[in-house]
Image (tube, rainbow, N blue to C red):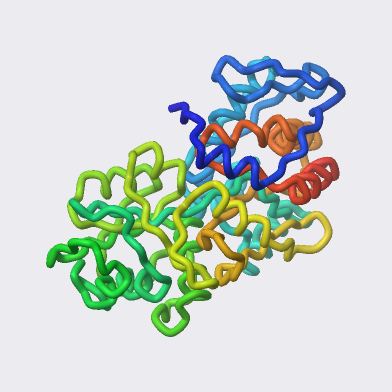
Length: 367
């Protein structure tokens, strides 16, 4: 489904300050049959068949990119399945996927296994950035405000009623029901869960004692598979609350809570607010390994603090050189200014130009 450009998405694109440059040798405005994504020039196409899977958070972006790339590159056959970050990494390590999508960079044990599979270092390449919305379905409650501490207590099962004193203290004018809170989490291994719980572990250390992980660790609550499953569960369940990527929240018209940042502000999820948090991310990897370090306690005024970066996990050197060239060709397009520009129409944030340029350089090094 094609998302319409909104003021929120336009704001993200503006804040990210993408400097538009050409992909390949031609500066073209050619559009794919799918809509907004500009197709690569014919000279930059690389044929070949690729199978990839992983992050459901980036599935909508991948679908758009594949349509645009395939429209100009008739010999390119690319299949991406949104099986979830954990499943994608496992498929990549076992040789069932040519590259994987993951909402988190590889952990040390995953990196070791992936390096062994490739026989060369594996790179974590941030390709899609998106805010994580705290979504809820409570009749008559608009503009819900929540701090990291309160969010942590809800998902840890320490706050179980919507009219709990902690929620009332942050929402003095809201008519909160005495209903039981239905906390929904991802049932499958998910990088979105890893990023959401990383936010809780950094911004609410006293109230979230489960660290962060792709597998949900806190007791209680209800599980739903993949991002679209979570969105559907919230939409159909009164008094429910969960976390999901912005694109899915927008697509399902879910209510989004204002989240308190490190500056003490309850911040609405807007393009400007998300962009301010994105601008504060640092590259934590070395060389062409581009793991991002996001500051979940950002004190930047007006910043929305819960954002994630979804990565492509790739071999720096492929044993099959033809396959390596096919992967490089496609990722050159996704990392291009044209490819990134399309994300603003899909509910994601384009990579800030400083990061995008580093990703493009890393892609150029693949073989």
